[in-house]
Length: 265
Image (cartoon, rainbow, N blue to C red; front, side):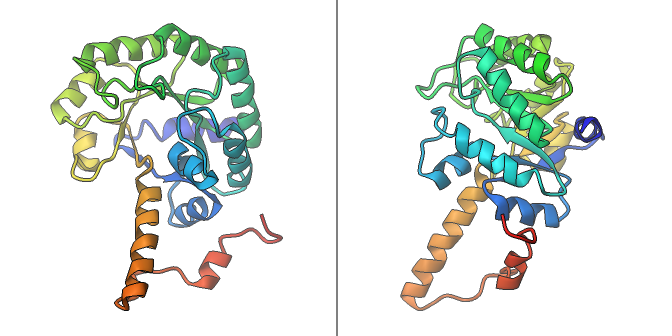
C-alpha cells in the first residue's frame, strides 16, 4: 500500500502533467485502465447522477464508498472525489477517508465550495485536511479551492491564501478548477510549493499548454461522464430518426464483458 501511494505522489513530479481521467462506475474505470492510464479519479457528479442524487450535497457517501470498493480491484491507482468530506466534522471526514484508504485508495479530492455557491471558511477546510493527514499520512490530499469555479471577485489572492493555508495543513496538491488563463496559472504555480491540478475544459488549454504553465496534473472532471451521456442520447435519437451509423471504436459486447472480473462484481 505504501508503495502504491508513493507511486501516485511520484506521478505528480515527472516534468509533464499527469492526465487523470475521471470515472463514474466500474465499466468506465476498467475501460480507462485498459487503455493504459496509470491513475484514475472519480467524478462526484457522475457518481451522484448515476445514483439519482444531487452532486455536492453530501448525499453520496455510501455510493462513493461502494464504488471505491469495486474499483480498488483494478490494476490502477485510484483517487476519489469526496466532495467536502460528506461531513462538517473533521473527525468524521478523517474516519471516512481512512476507510477509503483501507480499500486501497491512494488519494482524495477535498473541496471548499458549498452547494449555495459560497466558499467554506478556510479554517474548517484546514481542520479537515489536518485530520485526514493525521489518520493517513501518506495519502495524497488534493485540496480544491473553488474561487474561480464559483466566480469570486479577484480570485487570485483568495486562491493563493487558501492554497497556502491548505498546504500548511498538510495538503499534497492544490486543485483550481475554472482557472484557464495560462498567464494566471503560471503565477499561481510559481507561488506555490505544491503540485497544481487544473481541470481540462473543451476550448481551453491542452496538456502541452498547461504543462508550460507549470501544471502538474490535469483532471477531466465530469466531462467524460457527460460525453458518454450525450453520446447515448444522440444514438437513441438517431435510431428513432433512422439515421444511426456505428460510432467509431464502439466496444463490442464481449469487450465490455471482459472488463468485469471473473466471478462478477
